Every structure is written in structure tokens, then in C-alpha cells.
Image (cartoon, rainbow, N blue to C red; front, side, top):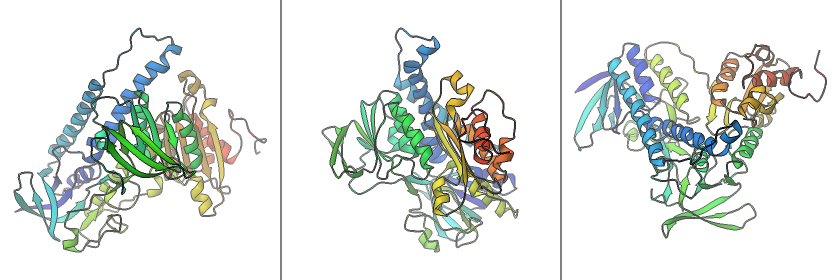
Length: 475
């Protein structure tokens, strides 16, 4: 029987990062992965392939819609979706091989198969051929991720009623698509296909897109997404989604109580994900999950059995790849006897649409719910010289700060390259910087990041240079 210091179950961005950090800290480490390729959902059917398709779709969209104003024209612009998918698959393969190389470089064993607990110190690995082996370890880290969530009445057949997994591997660009859910997955994949010419309709049960993000940010983003042809039906409850005569038929009730019957080539269900904790044998060792299937952990990410840790999508909190990675490093360092820190308040969220959306910290709705005093500052992207040079005028940066101390409470942005710009906001908020301090930092000109500087000045001193102020600057 193989014996390890640490066995990690799952090779996604939480699991493989945890394994590498454990190995760096001198622990004999193995990773159990049930699928053929390493990297988990994020690398294989999530973050990486979706961003790869977004890049291709955005290039094609810009060539069709906007290149002419730059003096660039085409006689016969062609698009080959098969090459787009081929490139996407190549990117996945390269990244997966990269993880495999990291395992080899760090001396990490890869165990292929499905892991389930036999007892508190042993797991059973069931291989694809049905054979089994037992492995023991001093510590375990559960990092099995999540899987798409569905609702009654939605018959996911993976043919016409599909999940994000199937949407990333279609063989041709559909004429039409209905998307259930206006969260990150729905908006990103909706953007991919809308930019490729698909007629996209998004149905959302609440009155906003991206329900967990700042409402003002969401309105700004939705206004931009409508320009690509996406239609939104908010406060719309889906009753049924079925395959019908080779199409997807979706029945819903709109906010006026009227029935909608929408037919499309595909219906993409993007209503969220749930922890993948089934068939792990958790009940065999007394580790309980909540009603959503999430494993309960303490401040050190330890389960009710102290030598078994859980990270990423299988525990409570936002289902973000970078959150899982940070938790993986944290758990590894706890195992090694260190005293790491993990600041959940400084974990950003990003939506890779065009423009992108990103945020960190409190939303305005959060602060109002807690009855906290705050001040806000907004800089529209269109006031920036770089925005006009790039012909990317949509968006804004919004800063929320404490009115007395000027401490940053939240930063929200809809902007080109917001996924990169948010890093500065994370550093500032994570280091307890003030809006005044952040606004006084010299930013290169012309850049989109100047919007953060201007928004900080608007939040605390009303002294932004390029934003029209409603009142005179404070002394």
C-alpha cells in the first residue's frame, strides 16, 4: 500500500496548487484525478476554454464591426469555427501538459481514478478499468470542485438542452440560443456566440444580471452587452426546457405574468454550480455537508476531522479558481506548521465580457444592508484619453470609501482590461489603503487605470481632474 504525507483529491486550480505547495514544503504528495487530463473544470471545460473562445469571438467581432473606422477593410472576411475549436483544444492541451510537467518537477505522484474514503486514514482509488487500490496518508485535501446545477423541468440531454461543457465544444455556430441564467457563465458564453452572429436571449429570474455584484456596475455592463445583440428578459421564471423537433423549446413566465415560448437551436443552462461531494465516502467517516452539498470547514480549512482539509468549490464562498488556489496554498502551509493569512475580503471577481467587469470588496447594496456610512466616486471610462484612442468608451470605475477615514471599502469597474486593472484595487484594499492614498499615486498616461485614480479623488475630495464635479473641490 502506498503511503503519503498528503493526498490531494482533485487536480483543479485548488488541488494542483495545493499539491505543488505541499511538495515545496517537503511533503511526500500525491494527487488523485478521475479524468484523463489534469487541471479540473477550470482548465478543461471552464475558465481557460471560455476565455480562449472569447478572444477568438472578439477578434472576429472587431473585424466585422469596428475595423473599418481604423482604416482596415476586407474584401471577403472569413470565419472558420472548426479552427477556433481546434485552437481552444490546443490551449487546453498545452496547459494540462504544463500541470503535468509541474507535478514531475516537484516529485508529485498522479493517481488516476475516483477517490472515496474507506476510513479516516485511507482512500480507495477506483480506476477506469474497474480495478482498485488503497492509499493511506497523514493528511488529505479535498479539492473536487463543482458541477453544473439544474432545476426541475429542465431536461439536460446534452444535445439541445446543454451545459457550459457542451457549449464550449459545439461543431458549428448556432443561429439562435436561449441562455437560462445571467451570471458569469451565461454572460461570457452569451458574449461568445452573440459576437459570432448567434441570436442570443438570456433569461434571469431576478431583476438584475450578476446578482452578487454592484447594481450600478450591472446596469452599465448590460447596456454595453445589448449593443452586441444580446436580449435580456429579467424577472423571468423558466418553467420548462425540452427538446422539441430537433430544437430547444423553453417555456417561461415573464414579470407581467405572461407565458413566453422561445424556440432556439440550443438552450444553455447556466444557473450556477453545486459542490461535487457525492460518492466521496464522506458519510463513511462522519464529514457532513450542508443542504447544497458544501463541506463545512473551520478558519484553517479543516473539516470536522482535523487532518482532512477541504478547499475551493466544495466549501462555502464564491466559486472562483483563484480563491481555490489561495485556499490550496493556505491549507498546505497550515499542514506544514506555518501561519499563513487568507484575506477573503480582498478576493476579486471578474467577468470576461466586452467590456470586462471586475470588483473587490463591498458593493453599495452590501453597505446599505449593513446600514454603514460610505461615500462614492465614479469615473466614466469615456473621459479618458486612452479610451478615445482605443475607441472603447463604455464603462466606469466606482470607488466606495469610509467618509471619515477614507478607507477603501469596495472597488467596482466595467472597463476594457478590467481583469488586469482590478489587481491594483486588490492590493490597495488588501493593504488597508485609503481612497486618498490611492488617488495620490501617479498613474501612467494615457491608461485605463487612470479611472481608478479619478474615482478615488471623487470619492473623498471631489477633486478629480477629468470628471465634471457637482460641487467645488474640498480644500
